[in-house]
Length: 491
Image (cartoon, rainbow, N blue to C red; front, side, top):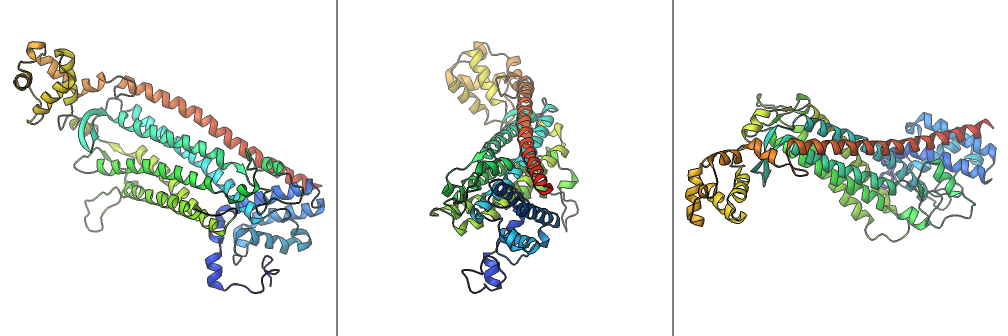
């Protein structure tokens, strides 16, 4: 039997169906580059701890670099996973007496956990950059639309006048929280399980802190049993992705609604639209619809991870092999969705006139009229609410005379007698003045929005610095790893 893993304990080989059922090779393509890095770091540490000879270390490292250049396509995909396939290829290249020493003090259990963390770490950094780009786009559009009136909605019913800036900065805030969650999640992903071996560590005198540093991790998962068996970092990451996709799906839903003839607030760039195979006039917001639908991928992946990890006894169980495809699918979908949303928002056309024209439809200025009654006439808000509620049954915006008539029925006197004037009514019914009066923190007034956008830009600048620092730390560590590889080879 040529299989380096099965030739000892097992006397027969599985058939093709069993191989296909148990193999993780398709998902392992995701962690191939990380597996090379883990092997390099582990081999250097073994040499430094005098567990393997310098000459063997040199040959192993040279072989690993060759495999790295050849790519995963050159490996034997009949093996059950990338780790054994890679090790088998190395042994073919340098001989078992040398290549067979690389796995000393290590198990596939700590190896795969390390590879997943390395790969996910890189993807999280890329997602952070994608989120920064989307936040910048939303802020840019908002700053250009401080005075762009539109109706605000509750229950998808016209509620109060607001601005496009107010609406989009709400989404930008949500995306900002998604970034914070991603950055916080990164801290628990970027920890090293390497050196935990199968679960009970090893009798070899390993230096776990050395491999941790070589691979650019922030620290160790110290308990060796926890190190190989925990996948809570995947559940947490998938939860972050699901939350982000739900926020994106809200934006996608609004793009779909705003693109309709009934709203006509925006028009998507042709790149993000499709047409009908039978109705030639159609311009469909298919990309937004697909993004909305793809939130189900992230939600489903989270549910799958929760189900896979539920009630597993310590320590490692093969069930965990099924976790990798789910985090891959969720991550790929989420990152693509962020970029697509950024593109749709950056290139869409905004119909400002139509937005402004509908800003007062459905008596959206009713709240300000009630507030005016409270301020001028010294009546309780609940009484003003009743008066305006009765007026809302009619058609169009009420006159002072109509207000007085309803007030007589409610409180027994006119509001004009309490100081309400026609000019005050007109001012209350003006959507521009409605917006400008709402100058409290976070309100839709242009001044308030300018402050919010400026504050958001400052947070983005700070977050960008943090992300750049994380990327630099990772790159510095990997560059240092390859420097150590060169030293070992050049000896």
